Structure formats: C-alpha cells, structure tokens
Length: 451
Image 1 (tube, rainbow, N blue to C red):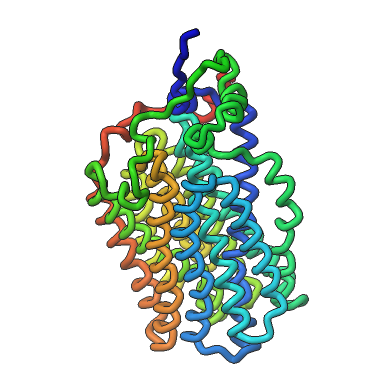
Image 2: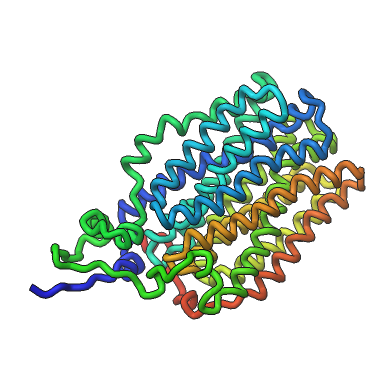
C-alpha cells in the first residue's frame, strides 16, 4: 500500500476560520488577560507601596524591575524550552508561576520579600507571552494571521484595563493587597486549560504523535482524508537543523535578528516606563490617586485599539509600514503629554501613546512570529522578547532617576519619546524576506462569513 504525504503547514495556511480556531484564540486570550493583569498591578499599587515602605523614586524603580528581570529570563528560557517539551506544557508551567507567586505577593512584609516574589512571578509572565504568540500564529490561517495574533495579544491590554479599573475602585478602601489576591484565580483554571488548550501541531508532528496530530487536522480542515498510511510532513524550513539559537543567525537572518532585538529593547523600555510610573507622574501633576490610576486605563485602551486595529491594517498593508506609522504617532503623543492641556486631551494623548507603545510591541511579536520558521519560532520570539526585557528593566529605573533629578515635567515625556525614534529607525532598516511578501488579505469579517 502506497504512503501519501500531507503538508501540515499548507493545510493551516489555507484553512478557513472554524470554531476550533475560535477555541484556541479564546483560551490564549484568557491566559494573556491574566498575564496582563499581573504585570500592570505594580503601576496600580506603586504610590501606596512607596508610602507604606518609604521608598525613594529610584528604589521604587528598581523594585519594579524585579518582575521585569524575571520576565527576561522567563522569555528566553521558556521560549527555548517549548521547542523541546511542547508549548502547552510550558504555558501551563508559566500560568502556575505567575499566578501563584503574584498571589503570594499579597503577604509580602518587606520590599525584599516583595521583590523576590515579583521576580519569580516574572519568570511566568515573560515565559508565557512568546508561547501564546507562537501557538496562535501557528494555528492561524495565513490570510488573517496578524489580525488573530493582534486580537489575542489585546488580552494583555484588557488585563491592564481590568487592573486599572479594579485598582481605582478598591485600592484606596481595601489596600494594595486585594489586587494580588485576585491574581490567584487562574490557579483554579489550570485543569480546564490542560483539557482544552491544544498542543502545537508542529511539535506533535516532529515528535511522531501522528494520531493526535491527525485528530487536530480534522478539526481544522474536515475535508481532508487521512489514513494510517498518511505521512504528515512540514515545510523544509520548519525542520530543525541544529541549535535553535544558532538558527536565528543562519540563512541571512542575522541582521534582522539584531534589529528585532533593538526594536524590542526600545519599545519595552517605553512600555514599562509608562506602565510603572504613569499614575505617579499624574499624581505629582495634581490628580487624585483614583484619577491617576485611570490614566493606566486609557493607556491600555490605546494598547487594545493599537493591537487589534494594527493587526487588521497589517494584514492589508504589511506589518512594517503600520509599525513605523504607529511609532511616529507615539513620538507626537509622548511629546504632547509634556504640555499643560485639558484632562480630556491628556487622556486622548495617553490612549495614542498606549497604541504606539504597547500596541506596537504586540505587533512586533506577530512580526517576529511570521519572520522565523516554525523550527525556531518560539526561540526567536523568546530571545527577542528576552533582550527586550533588558529595556523593560532599564525603563522604570531610568524614569525613577529622571524623577529624582526633578526635571521639568515636559522633559520626562520627551526623554521617554527618544526610544520611539530609535525604534522607528530600526524597523525602517528591517529587510523584508520573500516569505513575508503576501497578497493583500481579505477582511476578517469576510473570512468568518466564508464558513
């Protein structure tokens, strides 16, 4: 009996958007919502922590960087580990880490205890991001890949919005600990996530789990006929060829890899400078604690708009010009925040800044996911994200030092805008490989209606 071959990557690329895709999208979205909630918590409680533990601005900035330092190691370690033990297993480990240790943060009695717990939680927060992006990107049909990754990653912003809203209502009356107690909810969802979240199809094929892979293919493309003699194959560039990290610098990828690292560094520096210090900056400008926290709400609303809207635009015009345009808008918005303006103008500028900083960093994950072949995709995303975490660590510390210098209010935001200019130049120099030259995509709604 003859053996037939079935290309798994081609099936995924050409598939229609089906309920199974919805399931993957929604589970990844839910996980990233909790991930975003846990990350934004520190910016919400920072003013109270500084008061309770008598922290200086520099000390508070360094404390903020403990979680970000954990995220750097988590992104690099778990991104690579997923290529070896599977994305599903790593995602479950990371959820347990960031949820459990964030919950324990409520019981910290000193900055040292708090910092250690935030570092451990950061391992999970940073590790889960590249794997959720890789899993969503892998299962997404090619025509709407950027849209789906952007939609999934908007959960980060939704988590930030929830954190800001809950914090603005509860922190003053219930204390900062309530935010960390709520973060333990995902621990109860681990068995459900284990049951319904699928493993990477590429990983199943590479590890010889053909029967399990075939069941998933039937859900993605029910019209496919397979038998026990059907051999599942991957595209040639998705077959591992040695060291995963080494693969990032092979086949002409070295320059783009370095540029991706630079862009991630600059974008995450801006993201965490704003996420950690925006309420404190606005509190110093004369706003109440509740209203200052609501600036974080506006920042994450902008992030959600930027990630979803940017994803849709990217499927039509490609990621590179969209990201460049968003970074330029961010420069204008950040500089504008330094001027005295009515509150509604400031909220609008913060929303644009959120789209341009957090939204852009989310699109970068999609860009990297589409650039690297599946054999090194998690590693590529994890390393870029890990290098970016250095910028994330530096951002809050530099902002704390700027506040310590007591510069004019305008200069604080001008300094935060400089990385946006450098990121713009790095994106402009990215070389667009032939594999990314895709035809103009139909609208997501048209794709959904096609089922």
